[in-house]
Image (cartoon, rainbow over all chains, first blue to last red; front, side):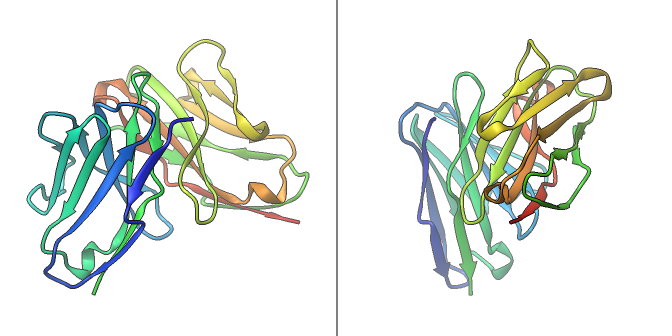
Length: 114
Length: 114
């Protein structure tokens, strides 16, 4: 099946700094990628839809100025957590959608803000 | 708003027992249905999907699911589980009316005792 990678897999940063997470579709082109957040022992919550060449669409309650999304190419989307705070600590997962609307998920990035 | 519910949060069973996990979704017009599995420490993997046609869908690793349109359900089954089936299982629904975004159920943690 299709492969999606994320980098880094784990990051620790200080409060107030920004962190960038990359999501790549390795063997297919994805015009649409998604960013999810997963809290411990909970399900995935969609944060935003990333569209190549256009602005991301954010879900209700997600601060677009805090979670900056850039879909620079058909194989790369980035999520930047700006001015991170401890409450932003979480597991962030991206997915890439194929033309047949199946989504393939990355391995996730664990963010810890100290 | 569209929603997906999974009836069981935790399931514990012995090897060779049969497994059935419930999934119901709110009415939302045309849907595509998925079951994902997340093994400990790993990323989400697609188990099976339903788009159209035969409502009984067979997936990987001996899993199958049945779409019952009248009940808005898409239950997952496996006749005989193995210890390696210990994982968290997520039902997800793509509601076309919501822009082809996946909505996840809360997940079911399955523990198979050897």
